[in-house]
Length: 182
Image 1 (cartoon, rainbow, N blue to C red):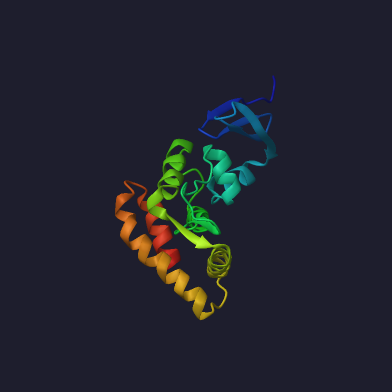
Image 2: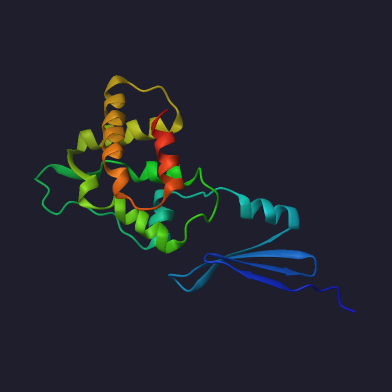
């Protein structure tokens, strides 16, 4: 008699396969239609992996959703287009949530919300870099200089204005609001 248990669980981004006392977690990309990873785990390690929080970066979130960063089209010479609520903050808030709380189409809707003109502004290169430093420092819990605190206040005020326009995503909205209250 074979010591083989075969169980298959298909999810939007992974397949769990139990076979011969081994657990295989097979990650795939629905947009690419291909397997992107395959890992073998013990049952306990697999459970920890499935209950883990997200580990997005801005790049991986954009790739997973198939979204490109939007830029303002009529930016004046010497100016840059930037997100008011930085995608770094979106990722930081998502990474506080349980893994797979949102499907890829839901994540795409979320990214598109922050990619719309209402969340874009024109900045000089210097101000754009200053704002980026402020956001990274804020996310990392570093002490902020006054000029960086002003950027965070602007982001907090902007999020306060636009969050009700984002339908659904209550867990995400709560996570981002908590993150911004630091």
